[in-house]
Amino acid sequence: MKKIIVLLFFNLIFAFSYSQELRKPSEGKSIVYFTRISSTGFLINFKYFDGDKYLGKFNHGKFLAYECEPGKHLFWSKSENIDYLEAELEAGKVYIIDSEPQMGAFKAGVKLVPFDNNQNNYKNIKKYERKKANILEAISGAKEYSISDDDLDEAKKDQEDLMKRSMEKYTKRKADGEVYTILPVNNSYISTP
Image (cartoon, rainbow, N blue to C red; front, side, top):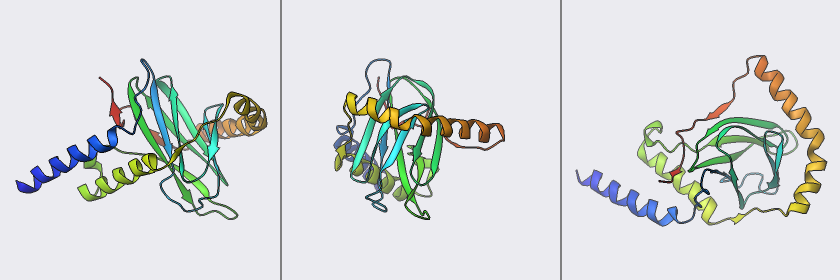
């Protein structure tokens, strides 16, 4: 019984101390945080996209808070490889996707991993708490990535061919039966009332 009380107390303090770090979405919107917990390949920029929309690029020590419409999204990231993540977002919710560096031939590859906020899906509570703490530390201890509208417009032009080829690759692979990581609607970090 004491363990349960201590864990509940720890969770309340932990949630309160970090909950102030995450923004809540505007009315009728969702927010997706893209983080980079691991410092492996820390100098390598990963490029981020929402379907055919370029979001920007950043390396370790930064995060991106992307406010968007709820519904279906195809998030993907480009480094040496491309990794796709299918998402179903709900209005008023905050989602977290960690960009895990992977071993590559010439530079770090990327794997998009949604944060699972259900502690029952972890081997034990300590693994869940450690993952949650690492994610929140990566956000609170990092600089938010932002790009000016002019730079975004210029970068979009540079990324047009990549976006076209990558979306075609996704469509072909999906038609061939490839299965991608899914961020389900109920896997949010925060729900606003």
